[in-house]
Image 1 (cartoon, rainbow, N blue to C red):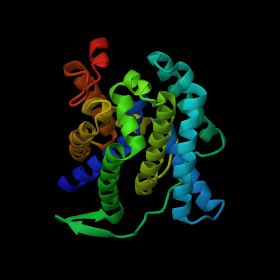
Image 2 (cartoon, rainbow, N blue to C red):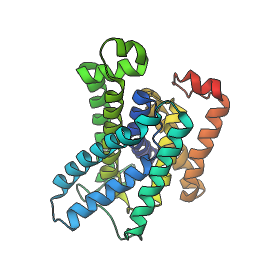
Image 3 (cartoon, rainbow, N blue to C red):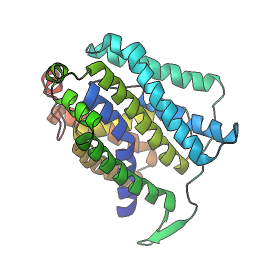
Image 4 (spheres, helix red, strand yellow):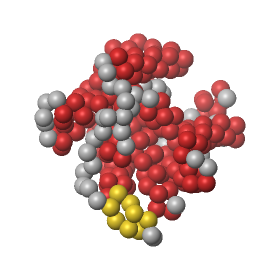
Amino acid sequence: MLVYGLINSAVLAVMALGFNLTFGISGVANFAYGAIYVVSGFLTWTLINHLDLPYALSAILTIIIIGVFGGLIYKLIIRRIRGLVISEVIATLGISIVILEFLRYVGFIGFKYSLPVFIKGSVEIFDAYVDIQRFFIIVLGILLITGLYLFTHHTKIGLAFRGIAQEEHTSLSLGINPDRIASFSMGLGSSLCAFAAIVILPLGTITVDSGYDVLINALSVCIVGGLGSTFGVIIASFIIGYAQTITATYLSPHWTIIVSLCAILIILAIKPSGLLGHQKELEERV
């Protein structure tokens, strides 16, 4: 349980980083996140099986294409309604439904779609056999968080990200274009979502309905940790990750999504801004 709890926590952290980055920079809660995750998996599968591209090239192309797609969503739709919270939620939720239903319409139905693992095999730890792919997720999660920290603290555009996140109007007076940075953050968040899909989906099959579960899990981790707080996301991933593992062990795996929903309700009742969040507006609204 200790090992699988750690792996499940890493999965949740990798899954939620893109959602958290987009909200932390642009303030947009991207409810199309789960759909972007699923379409990333199907796009990679299509590139491998219909265009016969190598797995690595298909993964890189998917991350780039989905990043551009995310940026276009902001430019064409979100930019016109930015700041109108309800409109943003309705728009991104509508995009999510359109994407998922389109995938269902073109025939991506059933459990026959899956991505190959990076390296086959398993190792024994504490009398439990663990797939090597799960260790990849932990290592890649650590590298991803480290890379994001270096990007946001030591690059020009990363510092612009932080400036917009802290004080948009002051950043504007310094020549930083909020719309351009927000568009870039939406694209980068979508690319991170695609990256998460490519490393996590080999553990199971790609299904359209899993998009809703991914959105709920990412949303719960970000709300519990505090929207916009990377460190909060890491802490929340461990809390929810181990809670889900304990629930799956002693009750049933079907109850794990209930854990995420309960975590959202509990944190909104106790501390609406999250464990390490600074979204005072959310706290005031609740």
